[in-house]
Length: 266
Length: 114
Image (cartoon, rainbow over all chains, first blue to last red; front, side, top):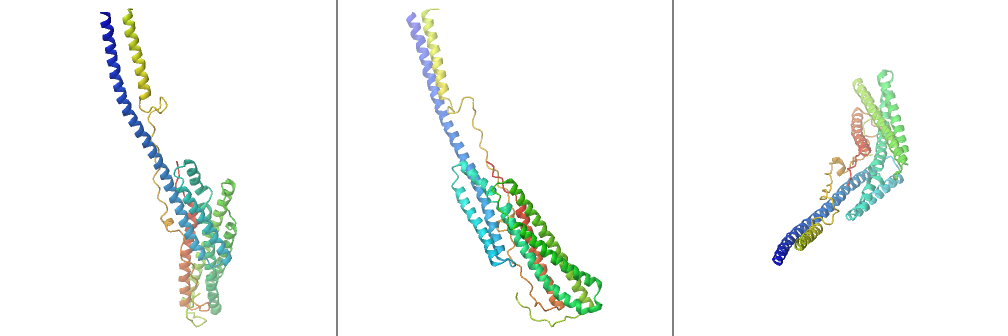
């Protein structure tokens, strides 16, 4: 009787063991498959995340290269700088473009390395300062060049106006002579402001992460920007003065002192 | 307790221990430390913010200052008016140059967050 009980119990337990083992095995297989799926999903998400970073960096670099190319075109159109200065500016811009192209290629190859990717992406803004320094610096020099070009043309116009006003003699009104004096003063100040702006920014160098230099660069750029704005206001005011004088001359019926000649290209 | 009961009890204990061990080692996420849940979803990159439209093609006015088209000695009313029109055009170019300076100084880079 005892033996039967023992045999029966052991059989029951053995059945339970086998049944439990089967359940465990099936569960383990399902669990392993689910685990593998999750690991693959995590890897895919990580790869996508890195690719997104690469794509954004690529867009940022492309934006900088486009801006540099536009600046290069503008620099080549500058008129009041020497050929050497223009060449130096263009060379500096091309160096930055080459550096951006190299960085773009390096970041494209960084997609499997989070560490180097992060460092390279940070260097887009941290090391090169394209928008923080190079572009505004070049734009200020280009704007100053245009200010001086306009001032030069206005000086030519001023000579014509002076001739006409002088020809009027005593019939020239006080408003006209006053406008002419203001016209000349505004042109002179515009030239002064433009030259000061160029002097202020021409020697600026990328800060390479040095906070004090970055702040000094930013302050210099903003101050030069204010000088360009002042020069622009001067020229607009001078333009207004010239219009006042021409209008008065036409109303006065004064005639030209010279016979008009065919326009020449300058 | 009879000998038979002891044997049955031991068999049950062994089965429970073995079953627990099997369950512990075969459960899903066995590679993860005990107590750690499913991995948090990886943060996806934020959409790229649109940038200034002018930057795609460059933000510098392409045209150079043109200068006056009348003769320096021509002080006729017509020439003066033509000169002023030319100055207007150049002042527009200067305004574009000024805008380029501002764009550089005010540029906000797209966040490159991890």
